[in-house]
Every structure is written in structure tokens, then in C-alpha cells.
Image (cartoon, rainbow, N blue to C red; front, side, top):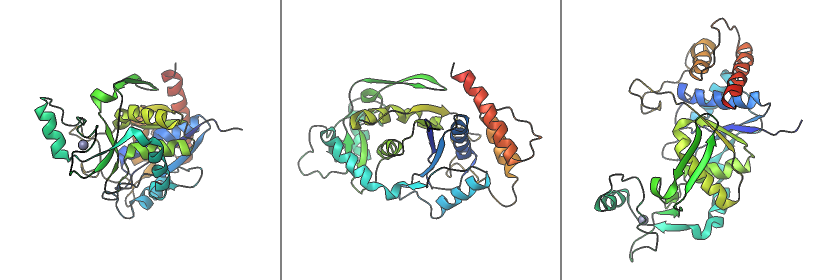
Length: 294
Ligand SMILES: [Zn+2]
């Protein structure tokens, strides 16, 4: 059988797998299973300041305990930096060096009378001011709407110039931006379907623009709701997300079934084994797809 579907789960090893990341892993896994596709595991370990020693292995172990099996070898982005460098070379003139500090960007937005200090005002677009040293490489974005179909959320649209601004692809200290690495790796790994948390829906237009510049295919996208804490914040190490895989936790009833229910899958508490869980959850996901893909 030819593989027409390749999906992936791409966690950052900044802490253990928690309920929020398990939900994202499960959604991508079920979608791959429902399509008889491949499911790959990619460690997005490029943020060397935030990486936590041993967290990658911890995540791998937790996925195994959950009964999730990946196809192909695990890829680690830290070992693929030559690919990101090659993509930067290819982007050539679309990139320019930027010398602005975070504070300078915020100040110049204030001077322009604009409240949103997040959008880069284009200070270095036409060259660095004499004596300034480049801190980062930015990508020039067009004043153009990018539209894509999210399989769950429907049609999405974003104007890169007015809603995002020229964005950083590489920091002067050598850190690669998530946007570049994810686009390069999705293409290199032949990813056809991206299923991930809704916190990344806002990145999608940037990634589609990069795919266009690099002549890479655009996968299909599905963003699932993000698990939040009582204050409505996305679960993360900072907001006190606990690893579900600790001590003698009952993975099936304490993690898998609650995560599936969060994804809107109706599963009976009486499920007795992980094997039964994955079979029933895949079926339930298929039924949900029939509904959402109409
Ligand atoms: Zn600048």
C-alpha cells in the first residue's frame, strides 16, 4: 500500500509530557491511524535556553507507556541545522539583518502611536543604521492576505504585514526560529497532514509563506483546542502543568481516556486495555472526521 498520509508529533523537550501535550500527541496519532498513515516523532530541541536535560527521553518514555508507536527514527532538530542553513541561503534577498532590541521595537511602535508593540515596524528593512550590529535575520513579508482551510476551524486568513510584520528566522546568537525549522522539516519528512494545538494556528500563515518562497508543498492543517488551566492559560511548565506519567498513575484511566474526552471522543469508562482504547478511539476519531470533513 502506498503511504499517502504522513503525520507527526513535534514536542519541545522543555519538560515532561503533560495533559496538554498528550492531547496534541493523541490527536495527531489518531488522525494518522484513522488514515492508515505514518506517524513520526520529531523533537524540536532548538531552543537551547529552554531545553531541559533528559526531557526528550522522558517524553519518549511517556509516549511508549501510552502505547503510542512511531514509524521511522526519531528526528532531533538540533542535528539538522545544516538544513536550516541551506534554507536561509535559498531565501537570500528576502532576508535582511536587524539590529533592533526588543525595547527599541516597542519604543518605535509607541512613537508611531500604535499599541501593538509585537509587530516589527520595519526599522532595518532598508539597511542597518551606521554603527549598528545585526542581532537577527528577518524575513520581509508582503502586504497580502494568506488564506488556508483548517480542517476543524474552517477558513483562516491573516495579513502578514499588518498582523505579524517581518519576522525573525535566525538570531545573531545562532538560534533558529521555530517557523523556519518546522517548515524545512515538515517538507524534508514528507509531512502531508499537520495536526497540532490551536496555539499554533497563528503561525500557519507565516509557514505557508515560507513554503511558498522555498518551493515546498503546503500540508493540510488541523488545530485542536488547547488544554488550559483554571486561569485559562495554556498548560506549560510555567503554569504548573504536571506530568501525568508519574509513580503508579493509571495511564489508561488517568490520562488516555480524559485526553480523548477532551478531544470530544465519547469513550466508555469500561474500556479495559490500552489496545481496546486505541481501537475505539481511532474509530471515534474517524466518525468525528466524517462529521468535520463534510
Ligand atoms: Zn531592526
